Length: 619
Image 1: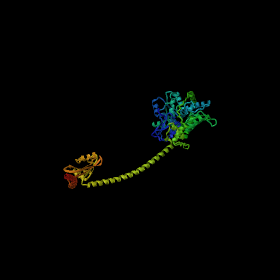
Image 2: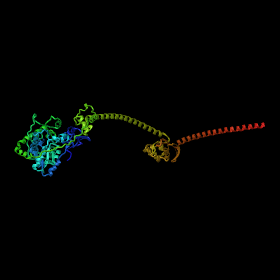
Image 3: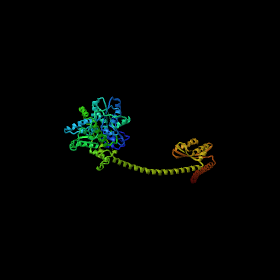
Image 4: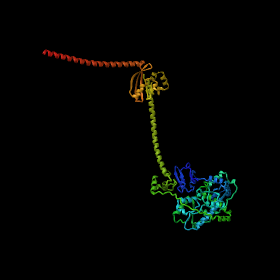
C-alpha cells in the first residue's frame, strides 16, 4: 500500500492552512509545495478537509475493495454508526443496507454491537481503578499521536482494541475466519491502523470512507429506488450506535459523568485534544481519565462528505439509535453479549518516538534575527505561516520543516526590498531609454549629415574630370565617380545603371591595372602618376592610402582626351622649363665656379712669372 495522505503539487498554492492544522508537524514546505511526511503523519486527515484547493487527498481503497468483492467467496461490511449522520439523503436505513449489499457484499453488519462489547471493557477498567488513569484508544489518530509525539504516555493508553477491530473478531467467530472484511468509516487513520491487527483474528482487508462508498454507488448507479428493504446481519447493537458522538462510548454502558461525581474528561476536536493531552501529562492535579476524539466526533471525520452540519448529523444519529432501540430484541442482545464477551479484546502499544531535537535558545534567536525579528514586539506572530508564534516557526525552521519564505512579514519585507530594487532598475531603465532616444535622434541626425556629406562627396566626385575609385581590402569597389565609369566603357556603364557607383564590384574584373591598388594596400606606399596602357589609351594613375591596408583610393586620368592632353602638355612643358632652368642654373653655377678657378690659376701663374723675372735681373 502507498502513503496514506498525498499532496498534488500542481494544485498547492502554499496557503499554509494544512501546516496550521497539523498537530504532528508532519508537513514540510519544500520545492514550493506542502509535502506530507509519512513517518510523522498520524492520519487524522485534518489537512485534507481544510485544503480549499483540494490539493491534499487520502489513499483510496476502492480498487482493493472491488477486487475483494470480485475474487472472494464472502465479503462482509462493517458500518460505522456515523453512517446514519452521513446518509441523511436515504429515507430508510433498510434501503441503505440493501444498497451496500447491491455493491456485492454478502454480509452487512453494524459496528454498534462491538461498541456495546468494548464499552463493558472500559467500564471494568474505570470501576476497577487502581491509581492509574487511562486515555481511551477508540480513536486511531489519538493513539498514533501519543505513540509518536508523547511516548511517555504510552503506558496510559487503554489496552483495548477499537470497536471496528472488535467487530472484525465477532464476524470471524460467527461467520468464519475466511470471510474478507471491509470497514466503512468516517476515519482515514483506520486505513493504516488496521495493519497492526493483520495477523490477528481481528484482521481487516480494506477500509472505505463514506465518500468512497458514495463513489461506488455512483459508479454502479445504485440508489434507494433501485433496491428493496434489507436488514443488518446480526449481532445487532443497542446504545453503541451513539459511539460517533462525544460521550457515546460510555453512554452504551450507562456511565453518566456528572460534574461532581464524574472521573472521566470527555472532549473532542483538535484544540481540546491537544490541550487535554498537555494537561494530562504535566498537571498533577488533573486526576481523571480521558475519553478523546481527535475530530469533532466521527460524524465530522475526514471521510464524511464536505459541508455536513455537525449538530444535524448528531441529531440524525440520536434519532436513528432511538428508532433501533425500540425494535431491538433485548433478550437476543444479551445472549449475543454473553456469547462474545470472552473474546480477547486486549491490545498493546509501543513507543514510536519521532520528536525532533529542540534547538537551543541561541539558535532560535539567531533565526529570528535573520528574519528581522530580534525585538520581542516583532515576535507576536500573525499565524499566517501555520505556526502560533514566531518562536515556534523558528524552531520548526531549525528542524527542517519550514523556510523563511513561509513567514508573511519576512516575505513582505523581501518583497518591498525587491520592489525598491525594481523601482531603481525601472528608473535606471527610464534614464537609459531617454538616453537611447537621444542617442537614436543624434544617430539619425549624424546619419542624415553623413548621407548629405556622401551625396555632396559623390556630386563633387562626379564633377571631377579625372576618374576616382575607392576600394576595400578585397579590392571591391566602395565608391566610384561617373567619370571613372565612362572611362571603363559600355560594360561598366551597364553595371552602374543597376548598381550606382559600381559599389561591390570587383576591381580586377573592371581594370587590368588592379595590381597597383593591391600593391598599395599591401605596402602602404603611395603610387603617384604612373602611366599605364589601357584599351588603346594611356591612363595616368595615382593610388594613395586612405586607411592603411584596408582602404585605398585611385585617381585615373585618360591622357588621350584633349582636355587632359592639353593640361598634361602644359604641365609637362612647365616641368621641362623648370628642369631646364634648374639645369642652366646648375651649369651657370658650375661655369662660374670654373671661371673663378681659372682666374685664380692664371693669376697664380702670372704672379709666379713675375717673381721669376725679378730674381733673374738681380743676378
